[in-house]
Image (cartoon, rainbow over all chains, first blue to last red; front, side):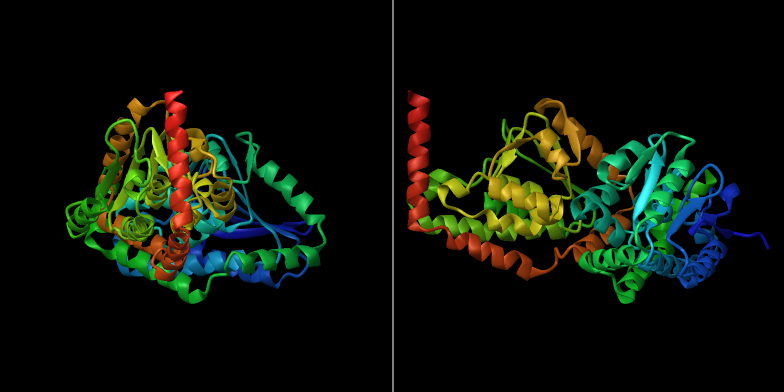
Length: 248
Length: 225
């Protein structure tokens, strides 16, 4: 069994890496499980000061594994619920979190990018939510995107579909930091070292308060988003559009 | 005009073959706000306009289809409120938008339900309390518009292009996404629309009508001198 997600810890900074580079780290059921397990360890480690979320290879994360959606539409529901819960757990971590986004962050991958406190990317990265063009509904990521860039910008981005560049993502506030191509990991590490210097109790207090102010989302609401998304994925519209995409 | 819009939107709403709606204004302006001349003689009419605007805003926001606005020239007061209720806005760099209504004694609170979600609470505060007009580039900067065009002539072409690209998406997915966004940002909550509309309407007094009449006279004098 390959190690689909692995955690390295150095100087109180944990780096959680999605490790399916051959599939551009597309979120499969296995990867989602592996992330959930890795989070358990991170949540339990009181010595950590910062968590970096990264993707091995050329892309941060290509989003939900669409092959899985077609092969097993009913399994999609569990994957979406799993992703929704992972996102909430990342949000509720008491330490600051950074997404190090190189190459691409698409759909659910872009969801992981907006649920973290910081996101470092580069100008040429492809970022966005092309769900609607595939007949899919980005209901799992919508609540977090609204909190990140505001309801109006989230509305325009999700309904227009497609992707934007890393530079545009930075202008929208979706990415907080822009680095040169090839220097994203380094820039994320620099930021992590800086954040690790903050008082951990103050950091946890501030983060908890920010989460409360922007409306910490209930499991019930997030689960409903996953159900909505799963219903769209299992519908005829999504199935025929996804098939057409894969056959191309 | 309110009647005509309401009727058309009702027809569109129930047409499952329509996936995207393009809202535009013919001529040099998108919409310059309420028909002031009609309200000059009757302050109660202003109050009625505000109630009807509030209904129009929620109808647009809750339309199951994606609504794109193509904004050239003026989108002022009620016209800007309509812009804030649309899902995506294409704007000309030379457009003029804003809510210059406190100077005639009216509160633009009626637009808060849609403007605050469109641009966030901080920007909504500055835009409404400041009352200054802003151009297309600034409309994009604060998040009211999603696409900037260099001039009025290119707005319509760009809006059509955007509508076509959205219409190519999965229609059921689009409807589900819009409904979910409406639920998440409070657009389905009537109270968020009703209370500010009532507050706005309450400012439509005889005093406001008199201020409006003075303003119109001043503008006319300015034109003649």
